[in-house]
Image (cartoon, rainbow over all chains, first blue to last red; front, side):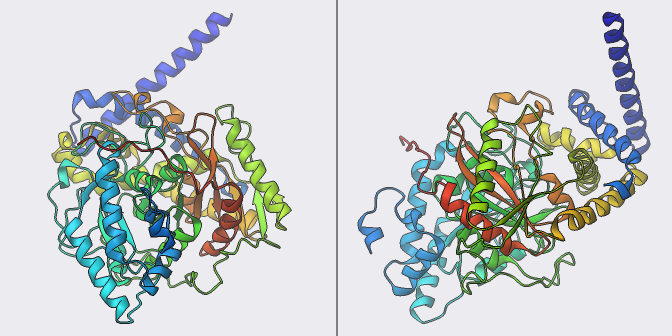
Length: 65
Length: 483
Protein backbone atom coordinates (compact mmCIF):
# COMPACT_ATOMS: atom_id res chain seq x y z
CA UNK A 1 0.00 0.00 0.00
CA UNK A 2 2.77 2.40 0.95
CA UNK A 3 4.49 1.78 -2.37
CA UNK A 4 1.28 2.48 -4.25
CA UNK A 5 0.78 5.66 -2.28
CA UNK A 6 4.26 6.94 -3.06
CA UNK A 7 3.87 6.11 -6.71
CA UNK A 8 0.53 7.91 -6.77
CA UNK A 9 2.04 10.99 -5.13
CA UNK A 10 5.01 10.99 -7.47
CA UNK A 11 2.70 10.56 -10.40
CA UNK A 12 0.60 13.54 -9.34
CA UNK A 13 3.69 15.67 -8.84
CA UNK A 14 5.00 14.65 -12.24
CA UNK A 15 1.69 15.55 -13.86
CA UNK A 16 1.71 18.95 -12.18
CA UNK A 17 5.25 19.53 -13.41
CA UNK A 18 4.19 18.67 -16.93
CA UNK A 19 1.20 20.98 -16.66
CA UNK A 20 3.36 23.83 -15.36
CA UNK A 21 5.92 23.31 -18.12
CA UNK A 22 3.21 23.26 -20.79
CA UNK A 23 1.48 26.30 -19.33
CA UNK A 24 4.75 28.25 -19.26
CA UNK A 25 5.65 27.22 -22.80
CA UNK A 26 2.25 28.47 -24.01
CA UNK A 27 2.77 31.77 -22.20
CA UNK A 28 6.21 32.26 -23.75
CA UNK A 29 4.85 31.43 -27.19
CA UNK A 30 2.07 33.98 -26.73
CA UNK A 31 4.64 36.58 -25.66
CA UNK A 32 6.95 35.62 -28.53
CA UNK A 33 9.89 34.90 -26.22
CA UNK A 34 12.42 32.20 -26.99
CA UNK A 35 14.28 30.79 -24.02
CA UNK A 36 17.82 29.37 -24.42
CA UNK A 37 17.30 25.62 -23.88
CA UNK A 38 20.13 25.20 -21.39
CA UNK A 39 18.62 27.89 -19.14
CA UNK A 40 15.11 26.41 -19.21
CA UNK A 41 15.47 23.92 -16.33
CA UNK A 42 16.28 26.66 -13.82
CA UNK A 43 13.47 28.88 -15.14
CA UNK A 44 10.92 26.10 -14.83
CA UNK A 45 12.24 25.22 -11.38
CA UNK A 46 11.44 28.81 -10.43
CA UNK A 47 8.07 28.90 -12.17
CA UNK A 48 6.64 25.80 -10.48
CA UNK A 49 6.66 27.20 -6.91
CA UNK A 50 5.48 30.56 -8.24
CA UNK A 51 2.51 28.82 -9.85
CA UNK A 52 1.74 27.10 -6.53
CA UNK A 53 1.89 30.48 -4.80
CA UNK A 54 -0.60 31.95 -7.27
CA UNK A 55 -2.92 29.04 -6.51
CA UNK A 56 -2.49 29.65 -2.78
CA UNK A 57 -3.43 33.33 -3.06
CA UNK A 58 -6.60 32.45 -4.97
CA UNK A 59 -7.76 30.55 -1.88
CA UNK A 60 -6.85 33.17 0.75
CA UNK A 61 -9.71 34.93 2.50
CA UNK A 62 -8.41 38.46 2.99
CA UNK A 63 -10.67 39.07 5.95
CA UNK A 64 -8.98 36.18 7.75
CA UNK A 65 -5.35 37.21 7.35
CA UNK B 1 44.07 62.20 19.37
CA UNK B 2 44.19 59.06 21.47
CA UNK B 3 42.52 57.07 18.74
CA UNK B 4 45.32 58.05 16.36
CA UNK B 5 48.06 57.38 18.89
CA UNK B 6 46.84 53.82 19.42
CA UNK B 7 46.36 53.18 15.73
CA UNK B 8 46.82 49.58 14.79
CA UNK B 9 45.24 48.44 11.56
CA UNK B 10 41.66 49.58 11.54
CA UNK B 11 41.91 51.92 14.54
CA UNK B 12 40.54 54.92 12.66
CA UNK B 13 37.81 52.74 11.23
CA UNK B 14 36.75 51.91 14.78
CA UNK B 15 35.69 55.51 15.31
CA UNK B 16 31.92 55.69 15.23
CA UNK B 17 30.32 58.18 12.88
CA UNK B 18 29.48 60.38 15.86
CA UNK B 19 32.99 60.15 17.40
CA UNK B 20 34.73 60.73 14.09
CA UNK B 21 32.40 63.65 13.45
CA UNK B 22 33.28 65.20 16.80
CA UNK B 23 37.02 64.79 16.17
CA UNK B 24 36.65 66.25 12.68
CA UNK B 25 34.95 69.29 14.12
CA UNK B 26 37.71 69.90 16.68
CA UNK B 27 40.39 69.39 14.05
CA UNK B 28 41.87 66.40 15.92
CA UNK B 29 41.55 64.32 12.78
CA UNK B 30 40.87 65.19 9.18
CA UNK B 31 38.61 63.68 6.59
CA UNK B 32 41.70 63.12 4.44
CA UNK B 33 43.17 60.97 7.21
CA UNK B 34 39.96 58.95 7.49
CA UNK B 35 39.85 58.45 3.74
CA UNK B 36 43.51 57.53 3.37
CA UNK B 37 43.14 55.05 6.22
CA UNK B 38 40.08 53.44 4.62
CA UNK B 39 41.75 53.31 1.21
CA UNK B 40 44.75 51.60 2.80
CA UNK B 41 42.52 48.97 4.38
CA UNK B 42 40.71 48.35 1.10
CA UNK B 43 43.98 48.02 -0.76
CA UNK B 44 45.39 45.62 1.82
CA UNK B 45 42.41 43.40 2.41
CA UNK B 46 39.79 43.67 -0.32
CA UNK B 47 41.59 41.65 -2.96
CA UNK B 48 40.27 38.52 -1.25
CA UNK B 49 36.89 39.90 -0.20
CA UNK B 50 35.87 41.68 -3.42
CA UNK B 51 33.50 44.06 -1.66
CA UNK B 52 34.37 46.98 -3.97
CA UNK B 53 33.90 46.90 -7.73
CA UNK B 54 35.28 50.44 -8.08
CA UNK B 55 37.45 52.50 -5.72
CA UNK B 56 37.33 56.24 -6.47
CA UNK B 57 40.59 57.24 -4.77
CA UNK B 58 41.17 60.62 -6.43
CA UNK B 59 37.54 61.68 -6.17
CA UNK B 60 37.47 60.64 -2.52
CA UNK B 61 40.56 62.63 -1.64
CA UNK B 62 39.17 65.70 -3.44
CA UNK B 63 35.91 65.46 -1.52
CA UNK B 64 37.76 64.85 1.75
CA UNK B 65 39.88 67.95 1.23
CA UNK B 66 36.73 69.94 0.52
CA UNK B 67 35.06 68.55 3.65
CA UNK B 68 38.06 69.53 5.76
CA UNK B 69 38.16 73.00 4.24
CA UNK B 70 34.46 73.57 4.91
CA UNK B 71 34.69 72.42 8.51
CA UNK B 72 37.61 74.78 9.08
CA UNK B 73 35.47 77.57 7.64
CA UNK B 74 32.57 76.70 9.93
CA UNK B 75 30.38 75.05 7.30
CA UNK B 76 28.73 72.00 8.88
CA UNK B 77 26.75 69.80 6.50
CA UNK B 78 25.51 67.29 9.05
CA UNK B 79 26.30 63.92 10.60
CA UNK B 80 28.18 62.45 7.63
CA UNK B 81 30.27 65.54 6.88
CA UNK B 82 33.77 64.22 6.15
CA UNK B 83 32.76 60.59 6.74
CA UNK B 84 33.68 57.96 4.11
CA UNK B 85 30.92 55.81 2.63
CA UNK B 86 30.27 53.72 -0.49
CA UNK B 87 27.29 52.86 -2.67
CA UNK B 88 25.94 49.55 -3.87
CA UNK B 89 26.52 49.61 -7.60
CA UNK B 90 22.89 50.23 -8.42
CA UNK B 91 23.01 53.91 -7.38
CA UNK B 92 24.01 56.45 -10.01
CA UNK B 93 26.87 58.77 -9.13
CA UNK B 94 27.68 61.43 -11.71
CA UNK B 95 30.61 60.50 -13.93
CA UNK B 96 30.91 56.96 -12.58
CA UNK B 97 29.65 53.72 -14.12
CA UNK B 98 26.58 52.06 -12.66
CA UNK B 99 27.39 48.50 -13.64
CA UNK B 100 24.70 46.64 -11.69
CA UNK B 101 27.26 43.79 -11.82
CA UNK B 102 25.96 43.09 -15.32
CA UNK B 103 27.51 42.79 -18.76
CA UNK B 104 24.42 44.64 -19.99
CA UNK B 105 25.25 47.87 -18.16
CA UNK B 106 28.98 47.52 -17.61
CA UNK B 107 29.78 50.75 -19.45
CA UNK B 108 26.81 52.86 -18.37
CA UNK B 109 28.22 56.09 -16.99
CA UNK B 110 25.81 58.18 -14.95
CA UNK B 111 25.05 61.66 -16.22
CA UNK B 112 23.73 62.74 -12.83
CA UNK B 113 23.58 61.63 -9.24
CA UNK B 114 20.90 59.38 -7.83
CA UNK B 115 18.87 61.05 -5.09
CA UNK B 116 20.75 59.07 -2.42
CA UNK B 117 24.14 60.14 -3.76
CA UNK B 118 22.98 63.74 -4.18
CA UNK B 119 21.93 63.89 -0.53
CA UNK B 120 25.19 62.30 0.62
CA UNK B 121 27.23 64.70 -1.49
CA UNK B 122 25.24 67.66 -0.18
CA UNK B 123 25.72 66.26 3.32
CA UNK B 124 29.50 66.42 2.96
CA UNK B 125 30.01 62.64 2.83
CA UNK B 126 33.02 61.23 1.02
CA UNK B 127 32.31 58.59 -1.61
CA UNK B 128 34.98 55.88 -1.69
CA UNK B 129 33.51 53.87 -4.53
CA UNK B 130 30.96 51.34 -5.70
CA UNK B 131 30.14 48.10 -3.92
CA UNK B 132 29.45 44.59 -5.15
CA UNK B 133 25.87 43.54 -5.78
CA UNK B 134 24.13 40.52 -7.17
CA UNK B 135 23.29 41.32 -10.79
CA UNK B 136 20.51 43.92 -10.96
CA UNK B 137 20.02 43.42 -7.21
CA UNK B 138 18.54 40.00 -7.87
CA UNK B 139 20.81 37.29 -9.29
CA UNK B 140 23.01 35.26 -7.01
CA UNK B 141 26.65 34.69 -6.08
CA UNK B 142 27.74 34.03 -9.66
CA UNK B 143 31.08 33.55 -11.36
CA UNK B 144 29.73 34.44 -14.83
CA UNK B 145 29.46 38.19 -14.20
CA UNK B 146 31.90 41.08 -14.69
CA UNK B 147 33.21 41.03 -11.12
CA UNK B 148 33.88 38.14 -8.74
CA UNK B 149 31.27 37.72 -6.01
CA UNK B 150 32.05 39.26 -2.63
CA UNK B 151 33.10 36.85 0.11
CA UNK B 152 32.03 36.67 3.73
CA UNK B 153 34.74 38.30 5.85
CA UNK B 154 34.15 35.84 8.71
CA UNK B 155 34.83 32.86 6.46
CA UNK B 156 35.59 33.29 2.78
CA UNK B 157 34.10 29.92 1.86
CA UNK B 158 30.69 31.35 2.75
CA UNK B 159 28.62 33.89 0.86
CA UNK B 160 27.98 37.28 2.46
CA UNK B 161 24.41 36.98 1.16
CA UNK B 162 22.91 39.49 -1.22
CA UNK B 163 22.16 41.43 -3.07
CA UNK B 164 23.90 44.28 -1.18
CA UNK B 165 26.85 41.93 -0.69
CA UNK B 166 29.65 44.46 -0.88
CA UNK B 167 27.98 46.77 1.61
CA UNK B 168 27.73 44.03 4.22
CA UNK B 169 31.31 42.92 3.64
CA UNK B 170 32.88 46.40 3.59
CA UNK B 171 31.17 47.48 6.81
CA UNK B 172 31.88 44.21 8.64
CA UNK B 173 35.51 44.24 7.50
CA UNK B 174 35.93 47.74 8.92
CA UNK B 175 36.60 49.52 5.63
CA UNK B 176 33.60 51.78 6.22
CA UNK B 177 31.25 52.65 9.07
CA UNK B 178 28.32 53.10 6.68
CA UNK B 179 27.32 52.00 3.21
CA UNK B 180 24.12 52.24 1.18
CA UNK B 181 22.10 49.50 -0.45
CA UNK B 182 18.72 48.48 -1.76
CA UNK B 183 16.29 45.95 -0.31
CA UNK B 184 13.43 44.45 -2.33
CA UNK B 185 12.98 41.19 -0.44
CA UNK B 186 15.81 41.39 2.10
CA UNK B 187 18.81 42.53 0.07
CA UNK B 188 20.16 44.78 2.81
CA UNK B 189 19.00 42.81 5.82
CA UNK B 190 20.40 39.54 4.47
CA UNK B 191 23.99 40.73 4.05
CA UNK B 192 23.76 42.55 7.38
CA UNK B 193 22.53 39.39 9.11
CA UNK B 194 25.17 37.17 7.53
CA UNK B 195 28.06 39.62 7.89
CA UNK B 196 27.17 40.87 11.38
CA UNK B 197 26.27 44.49 10.65
CA UNK B 198 23.18 46.60 11.19
CA UNK B 199 20.89 47.38 8.24
CA UNK B 200 17.82 49.56 8.15
CA UNK B 201 15.26 48.94 5.43
CA UNK B 202 13.34 52.14 5.93
CA UNK B 203 9.61 52.63 5.55
CA UNK B 204 8.55 52.40 1.90
CA UNK B 205 8.86 55.91 0.53
CA UNK B 206 11.17 57.23 3.27
CA UNK B 207 14.18 57.31 0.92
CA UNK B 208 14.02 58.27 -2.74
CA UNK B 209 14.82 55.69 -5.37
CA UNK B 210 15.41 58.29 -8.09
CA UNK B 211 18.52 57.28 -10.03
CA UNK B 212 18.71 53.83 -8.49
CA UNK B 213 18.27 50.84 -10.80
CA UNK B 214 14.78 49.48 -10.16
CA UNK B 215 13.87 45.85 -9.62
CA UNK B 216 10.32 45.97 -8.30
CA UNK B 217 8.85 49.45 -8.14
CA UNK B 218 6.39 48.70 -5.37
CA UNK B 219 8.83 46.73 -3.21
CA UNK B 220 12.17 48.52 -3.72
CA UNK B 221 13.57 50.21 -0.62
CA UNK B 222 16.83 52.12 -0.22
CA UNK B 223 18.84 52.74 2.92
CA UNK B 224 21.94 52.32 5.07
CA UNK B 225 23.99 49.51 6.50
CA UNK B 226 26.15 50.51 9.46
CA UNK B 227 28.48 48.97 11.99
CA UNK B 228 26.30 50.20 14.86
CA UNK B 229 22.73 51.33 15.32
CA UNK B 230 23.92 54.90 15.86
CA UNK B 231 26.00 54.85 12.66
CA UNK B 232 22.98 53.54 10.79
CA UNK B 233 20.68 56.17 12.28
CA UNK B 234 23.07 58.95 11.26
CA UNK B 235 23.24 57.64 7.71
CA UNK B 236 19.47 57.30 7.51
CA UNK B 237 19.00 60.89 8.61
CA UNK B 238 21.10 62.13 5.70
CA UNK B 239 19.34 60.20 2.92
CA UNK B 240 15.71 60.24 4.14
CA UNK B 241 13.09 62.71 3.01
CA UNK B 242 10.68 63.53 0.23
CA UNK B 243 11.79 63.87 -3.38
CA UNK B 244 9.53 65.32 -6.07
CA UNK B 245 11.28 63.11 -8.65
CA UNK B 246 10.10 59.96 -6.84
CA UNK B 247 6.34 59.99 -6.24
CA UNK B 248 6.69 57.06 -3.85
CA UNK B 249 8.37 59.27 -1.26
CA UNK B 250 6.48 60.85 1.62
CA UNK B 251 7.11 63.95 3.67
CA UNK B 252 7.46 62.33 7.08
CA UNK B 253 9.55 63.38 10.07
CA UNK B 254 13.08 61.94 10.08
CA UNK B 255 14.65 61.15 13.47
CA UNK B 256 17.47 63.62 14.18
CA UNK B 257 20.46 61.79 15.66
CA UNK B 258 21.62 64.97 17.37
CA UNK B 259 18.30 65.91 18.92
CA UNK B 260 18.07 63.14 21.50
CA UNK B 261 14.74 62.04 20.06
CA UNK B 262 16.05 59.06 18.16
CA UNK B 263 16.06 56.65 21.08
CA UNK B 264 19.81 56.14 20.89
CA UNK B 265 20.06 56.22 24.68
CA UNK B 266 19.16 52.57 25.24
CA UNK B 267 16.24 53.54 27.47
CA UNK B 268 13.42 51.15 26.59
CA UNK B 269 11.25 51.66 29.65
CA UNK B 270 7.64 51.53 28.55
CA UNK B 271 8.51 50.48 24.99
CA UNK B 272 5.80 48.11 23.79
CA UNK B 273 7.46 45.10 22.17
CA UNK B 274 5.54 42.38 20.32
CA UNK B 275 7.03 39.07 19.30
CA UNK B 276 5.99 35.91 17.54
CA UNK B 277 7.90 32.68 16.96
CA UNK B 278 5.23 31.40 14.57
CA UNK B 279 7.30 31.84 11.41
CA UNK B 280 10.47 30.11 12.62
CA UNK B 281 10.12 28.56 16.07
CA UNK B 282 8.68 25.21 15.04
CA UNK B 283 10.68 24.92 11.82
CA UNK B 284 13.43 22.31 12.33
CA UNK B 285 15.51 24.21 9.80
CA UNK B 286 15.90 27.11 12.23
CA UNK B 287 19.26 27.09 13.99
CA UNK B 288 18.52 26.66 17.72
CA UNK B 289 21.16 29.29 18.52
CA UNK B 290 19.07 31.85 16.65
CA UNK B 291 15.89 30.97 18.52
CA UNK B 292 17.77 31.13 21.83
CA UNK B 293 19.40 34.45 20.98
CA UNK B 294 16.00 35.98 20.23
CA UNK B 295 14.65 34.63 23.54
CA UNK B 296 17.57 36.23 25.39
CA UNK B 297 16.97 39.50 23.57
CA UNK B 298 13.30 39.57 24.56
CA UNK B 299 14.15 38.75 28.18
CA UNK B 300 16.72 41.54 28.23
CA UNK B 301 14.28 44.11 26.91
CA UNK B 302 11.77 43.06 29.55
CA UNK B 303 14.42 43.32 32.25
CA UNK B 304 15.16 46.87 31.08
CA UNK B 305 11.53 47.86 31.46
CA UNK B 306 10.00 47.18 28.05
CA UNK B 307 6.52 45.65 27.90
CA UNK B 308 6.97 42.40 25.98
CA UNK B 309 3.91 40.57 24.66
CA UNK B 310 3.29 37.74 22.22
CA UNK B 311 1.26 38.57 19.14
CA UNK B 312 -0.36 36.65 16.32
CA UNK B 313 0.92 37.12 12.78
CA UNK B 314 -0.74 36.13 9.51
CA UNK B 315 0.85 33.02 7.95
CA UNK B 316 4.35 33.50 6.58
CA UNK B 317 3.45 31.49 3.48
CA UNK B 318 0.90 34.10 2.45
CA UNK B 319 3.38 36.97 2.84
CA UNK B 320 6.00 35.01 0.93
CA UNK B 321 3.66 34.06 -1.90
CA UNK B 322 2.37 37.59 -2.23
CA UNK B 323 5.86 39.10 -2.27
CA UNK B 324 7.31 36.55 -4.68
CA UNK B 325 4.48 37.04 -7.17
CA UNK B 326 4.71 40.84 -7.15
CA UNK B 327 8.51 40.82 -7.34
CA UNK B 328 8.46 38.29 -10.17
CA UNK B 329 5.92 40.23 -12.22
CA UNK B 330 7.52 43.64 -11.69
CA UNK B 331 11.08 42.32 -12.13
CA UNK B 332 10.16 40.69 -15.41
CA UNK B 333 8.49 43.87 -16.62
CA UNK B 334 11.54 46.00 -15.73
CA UNK B 335 13.92 43.68 -17.62
CA UNK B 336 11.62 42.32 -20.33
CA UNK B 337 13.28 44.08 -23.25
CA UNK B 338 16.70 42.62 -22.45
CA UNK B 339 15.28 39.23 -21.55
CA UNK B 340 13.84 39.10 -25.06
CA UNK B 341 16.74 40.60 -26.96
CA UNK B 342 19.84 39.54 -25.06
CA UNK B 343 19.17 36.58 -22.79
CA UNK B 344 22.81 35.49 -22.90
CA UNK B 345 23.98 38.85 -21.56
CA UNK B 346 22.41 38.09 -18.18
CA UNK B 347 24.15 35.91 -15.66
CA UNK B 348 22.69 32.43 -15.55
CA UNK B 349 21.06 32.84 -12.12
CA UNK B 350 19.64 36.27 -12.95
CA UNK B 351 17.99 35.06 -16.12
CA UNK B 352 16.57 32.03 -14.34
CA UNK B 353 15.20 34.20 -11.52
CA UNK B 354 13.68 36.86 -13.77
CA UNK B 355 12.03 34.72 -16.42
CA UNK B 356 9.42 32.98 -14.24
CA UNK B 357 7.75 36.37 -13.89
CA UNK B 358 6.60 36.01 -17.49
CA UNK B 359 4.10 33.49 -16.18
CA UNK B 360 2.35 35.86 -13.79
CA UNK B 361 -0.86 37.05 -15.39
CA UNK B 362 -2.69 40.28 -14.69
CA UNK B 363 -5.38 38.66 -12.57
CA UNK B 364 -2.83 36.91 -10.35
CA UNK B 365 -0.87 40.13 -9.96
CA UNK B 366 -4.00 42.06 -9.01
CA UNK B 367 -4.89 39.34 -6.54
CA UNK B 368 -1.43 39.61 -4.95
CA UNK B 369 -1.76 43.38 -4.70
CA UNK B 370 -5.16 42.95 -3.04
CA UNK B 371 -3.81 40.39 -0.55
CA UNK B 372 -0.86 42.70 0.17
CA UNK B 373 -3.24 45.43 1.31
CA UNK B 374 -4.93 42.90 3.58
CA UNK B 375 -1.63 41.74 5.07
CA UNK B 376 -0.42 45.28 5.72
CA UNK B 377 -3.71 46.15 7.38
CA UNK B 378 -3.51 42.98 9.46
CA UNK B 379 -0.04 43.93 10.74
CA UNK B 380 -1.25 47.42 11.61
CA UNK B 381 -4.29 46.04 13.38
CA UNK B 382 -2.83 43.00 15.13
CA UNK B 383 0.63 44.32 15.99
CA UNK B 384 1.21 48.02 15.60
CA UNK B 385 -2.08 49.26 16.99
CA UNK B 386 -0.73 48.35 20.44
CA UNK B 387 3.04 47.99 19.99
CA UNK B 388 6.04 50.06 18.97
CA UNK B 389 8.25 47.21 17.79
CA UNK B 390 7.84 43.65 16.51
CA UNK B 391 10.71 41.21 17.00
CA UNK B 392 11.05 38.19 14.76
CA UNK B 393 13.76 36.19 13.04
CA UNK B 394 15.77 37.75 10.24
CA UNK B 395 17.43 34.60 8.90
CA UNK B 396 16.99 31.02 10.05
CA UNK B 397 20.57 29.87 9.54
CA UNK B 398 24.06 31.25 9.16
CA UNK B 399 25.51 32.12 5.75
CA UNK B 400 25.48 29.42 3.08
CA UNK B 401 28.63 28.12 1.47
CA UNK B 402 29.46 29.05 -2.12
CA UNK B 403 29.37 25.37 -3.03
CA UNK B 404 25.77 25.14 -1.82
CA UNK B 405 24.83 26.84 -5.11
CA UNK B 406 24.34 24.48 -8.06
CA UNK B 407 24.70 25.28 -11.75
CA UNK B 408 21.01 26.11 -12.16
CA UNK B 409 18.76 28.17 -9.91
CA UNK B 410 17.38 27.51 -7.33
CA UNK B 411 19.78 26.42 -4.59
CA UNK B 412 18.52 24.40 -1.60
CA UNK B 413 15.89 26.34 0.32
CA UNK B 414 17.90 27.73 3.20
CA UNK B 415 20.93 28.69 1.14
CA UNK B 416 19.00 31.71 -0.05
CA UNK B 417 16.07 32.14 2.28
CA UNK B 418 15.45 34.90 4.77
CA UNK B 419 12.33 35.94 6.68
CA UNK B 420 12.63 39.46 5.38
CA UNK B 421 10.19 39.60 2.47
CA UNK B 422 7.04 40.28 4.55
CA UNK B 423 8.12 43.83 5.41
CA UNK B 424 9.43 44.67 1.95
CA UNK B 425 5.95 43.65 0.86
CA UNK B 426 4.06 45.76 3.39
CA UNK B 427 6.49 48.68 3.56
CA UNK B 428 6.99 48.61 7.32
CA UNK B 429 10.51 49.64 8.44
CA UNK B 430 12.68 46.69 9.42
CA UNK B 431 16.16 46.47 10.89
CA UNK B 432 18.60 43.57 10.90
CA UNK B 433 20.48 43.62 14.20
CA UNK B 434 23.49 41.43 15.06
CA UNK B 435 23.35 39.27 18.21
CA UNK B 436 26.79 37.72 18.21
CA UNK B 437 27.83 34.44 16.64
CA UNK B 438 26.77 30.84 16.18
CA UNK B 439 29.07 27.99 17.15
CA UNK B 440 30.48 27.91 13.61
CA UNK B 441 31.83 31.45 14.04
CA UNK B 442 29.34 33.08 11.68
CA UNK B 443 27.08 35.98 12.72
CA UNK B 444 23.48 35.65 13.81
CA UNK B 445 20.85 38.25 14.69
CA UNK B 446 17.21 39.21 14.70
CA UNK B 447 14.79 41.50 12.91
CA UNK B 448 13.11 44.56 14.45
CA UNK B 449 10.02 45.87 12.69
CA UNK B 450 8.09 49.06 13.34
CA UNK B 451 4.99 50.96 12.28
CA UNK B 452 5.38 53.03 9.13
CA UNK B 453 7.80 55.92 9.73
CA UNK B 454 8.48 54.46 13.18
CA UNK B 455 12.22 54.06 12.62
CA UNK B 456 12.97 55.80 15.93
CA UNK B 457 11.47 52.85 17.83
CA UNK B 458 13.80 50.49 16.01
CA UNK B 459 16.78 52.64 16.96
CA UNK B 460 15.54 52.67 20.55
CA UNK B 461 15.20 48.89 20.91
CA UNK B 462 18.24 48.23 18.74
CA UNK B 463 20.52 50.42 20.85
CA UNK B 464 19.56 48.57 24.03
CA UNK B 465 20.10 45.14 22.46
CA UNK B 466 23.32 46.14 20.74
CA UNK B 467 24.84 47.25 24.04
CA UNK B 468 24.23 43.81 25.54
CA UNK B 469 24.64 41.41 22.61
CA UNK B 470 26.08 43.32 19.66
CA UNK B 471 29.79 42.37 20.08
CA UNK B 472 30.77 45.54 18.26
CA UNK B 473 34.35 45.15 19.50
CA UNK B 474 34.80 41.95 17.48
CA UNK B 475 35.93 42.13 13.86
CA UNK B 476 36.77 39.39 11.37
CA UNK B 477 40.45 38.40 11.14
CA UNK B 478 41.39 39.55 7.66
CA UNK B 479 44.24 38.37 5.49
CA UNK B 480 46.39 41.06 3.90
CA UNK B 481 47.15 40.82 0.22
CA UNK B 482 50.62 39.46 -0.55
CA UNK B 483 51.05 41.83 -3.49
